[in-house]
Length: 411
Image (cartoon, rainbow, N blue to C red; front, side):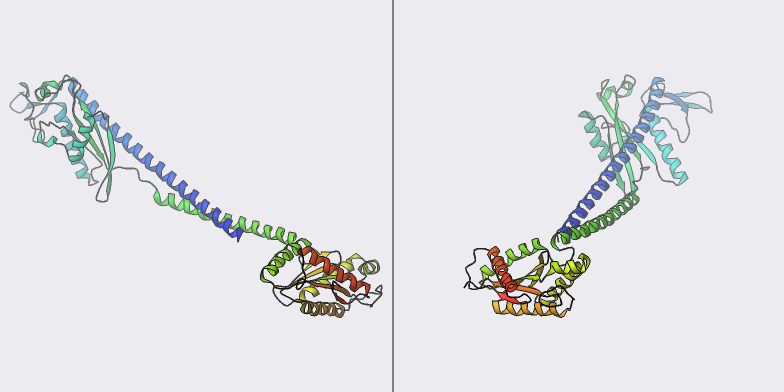
């Protein structure tokens, strides 16, 4: 259960780390997307400003009057139009009018190519001379923020399924601007208006590939966690078995017996139930080893241990190797007569194995002596005392000829 909890905990931590990694990468991608969009729009804005500056340094430029380039009715200057001859008339185009014409040409070109408006810009002001330069709601909001000290702004916008980036920066009043705008109350250095740039060319975030990549890494990591924790679990079980079970016989060892006996002793005291134990000792085992060798002795102990274990039918009953050729049996909620019956069954089963023992002084097969003690009706101070009583009974069985069962008696 503990290993399972560890596996779940590590898996949750791994999933959390993958989620954090995905969010971190996605956030960085969003920041990079905004940075590229911002820099692109700012670069476009600067190109417009440089073009306007060229026009302003020439105090406006003259172009032929055509159907698409009519005189600017809002430009108040005595030399606005110059008639060169009967076929050619020139009209002055100031920076603002030039900016608007370039914007209209850009939109016309995009319409002709049917690719959609990739970039459009708009010159505007809170006090526009030309009605077409009236600000939109977002432009008006940004212009008011510029007057409070904001240098430039950019945000992502969405129109239908189309994503765009909207950028805007202010235009400052220069000396050349005052010729047209002084009457509006502007002074040199004032924010006269601004130019907005809307770009529909926005770098797309590879969200699907980013998500699939993290999912793949997450699944590989989870597989690795399951595999690693599984190996650790098996290693832990191996270590636990080595700590609990006797390597030779396959039954629990003495340490396991002591822990189990203490637990059962406390339960018997709490529920006022009898607890019996049986101490067993293979008769003349040293002589068996001397006669047949240690390999045969080990095999003999394995058979004895498995026979004792097979003789116990209840789930709560258990046996353990106590040390050397000694074995111990714990019988919870078992009175003395019941324990004596089980002990006799164990003795009989061992004898029936018929393992030859030519050096035995009692029988010519391997036999076992057993001592039984129970906590019922006795005032025991601890579970160790119960072990001592069963040892006393075992010693009695040996004294009386071995291959028999004896119980502890205080008489």
